[in-house]
Image 1 (spheres, helix red, strand yellow):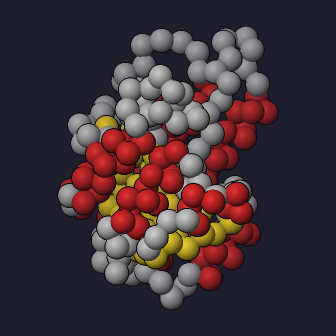
Image 2: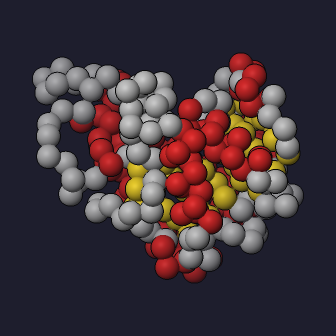
Amino acid sequence: MPTVLVTGANRGIGFEFVKSFAADGWRVHACARNVEKARDVRALEGEVVSHKLDVTNGLKLASLARELVAEPIDVLINNAGLRSAGAALGKTDFDEWASVLQVNTLAPLRMVERFGGLIERSERKVVVNISSIMGSIGQTSSGGDYIYRSSKAALNMVTKTLANDLAGRGVTVISFHPGWVQTDMGGPGAAITPAQSVAGMRRVIDGLTPADSGKFFNYDGTPIEW
């Protein structure tokens, strides 16, 4: 049975990943800071194990990695993320910026450093970072949103650098733009549902090869420029 670990698993895209993988017979480790409130996760059928996890807490990550030490992880999905308030130039909240970077950029690297050995021991060896097209420098044509944009641009650099570092170990690392999704972050007027976003990303994940490592994809598999 293949195994996936998903952060930010209690709602939105993270929950949809958990539901999708569980329905396909995967063993799913569903991680969330407020997992005790994640009733929808606990109600799912299949091999779903819930874990309370703050991805910014290195000690908690180390503890979970020790707990799962005997279990290879085929796919790690770094989905947990924060959206900034998007203040205009001159109104930047630098404390908020630090908090967003901790979750959106530092935490995915922490996860790989802690769980890398479990990923290497698996058959699939895949790391998926949920980024955003707002982190694409090549496609930035407007101002504002310094905090969120920079956190995702930095995450994309983490993806590319990890791909280089882990190439010799057979690990494939990619970034995704999940689309404009109808979640708490995307809002009810967004273009696609979480189910549509995750279905597209699952198709890409299922077809990944080592040659794809270090790439940035739209949820439908279309490449995105850095």
